[in-house]
Length: 98
Image (tube, rainbow, N blue to C red; front, side, top):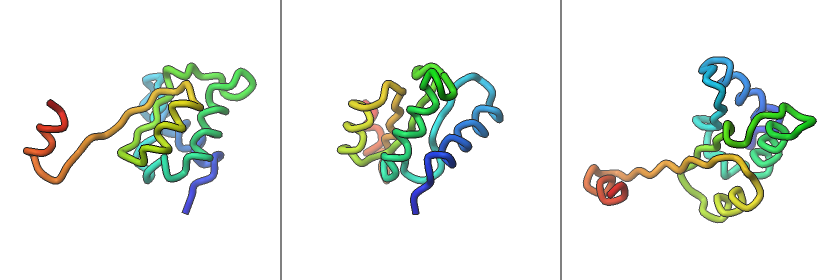
């Protein structure tokens, strides 16, 4: 089930109000890249002059996969992207990090 772009924006705002550090982070609600259309639309509204008018540097989308959608996001959005790297063992995690 996909989340509508309006719901994505509401979640952004709720997180921003809770953490109130001035940064928005889209994370912890499933894999955003599986909902790329609505994520792109929501981030566009968040940064648009006639939308919420936040700086793209203050909006971050966090993901852990789906490379084609990550590439599309990077092409189409000026917002920040955080990629979570993890594995099933500490040895593999260390190999990824270093």
